[in-house]
Image 1 (cartoon, rainbow, N blue to C red):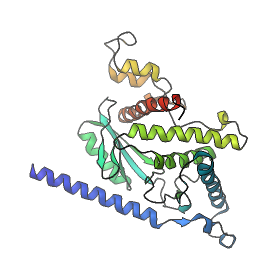
Image 2: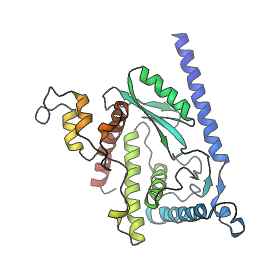
Image 3: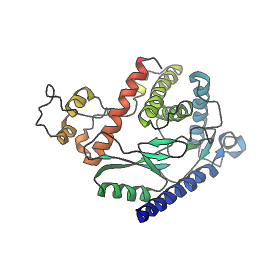
Image 4: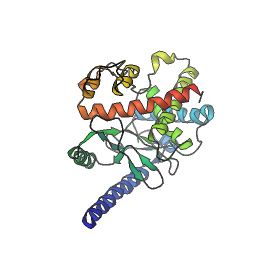
Length: 290
């Protein structure tokens, strides 16, 4: 028990050390966007990057002026991290389960993911979980919110997003600064996604664009009405003898039409778990008009 406790303690120290140093590295690379856009600094960045940064400030102004999102220094600076993602998240669930494994953190509470600033470290942790019987998904994340503790920057990791997706990410991350409930990842992501979707609709309308053809919200399970009852094993909708694993292969598709059956089993389980749990909160938020 003592050895196990020491091992767990050392693992925690390593994890939080990389989190502190990784977060600090992002902060020290920030440069004020207004200074980067000064006429005399035209040679510092490419014309395309300067145009994107101008767009980011228009979106940022809109977020506070029209959506009531925090008017602070977040997304008023830019940082080039020199890598494709800000962090890599590890998501896990018991095999063929929709109940996620959670990790608890100081201040932020418990969440259904564990983030790493180094991809190899994330995959090593994922491999350990997989060896312990979990379905695991390790994926890159373009940005995360520090919940207002620090001024989050615009990053190279999402600078080339399509305009609507660019706006969506900024609205989403700012929404986390407005409402964040400890120990409830599903609610937090659903709230931010609801703000993101409504925010982009209003942004596109303000530009005179058709929101239906310019924006699709993040991937969702479009046939959950068929999937969820079958997963729960209700005889009226799914033969009791149907193996639960087969549900992954036939019932759910992402909104872009790509079948989840083409994904690995661990990706399927983790993705479906997150999509099903968040979709319930998103529907509730929309019904309430929030």
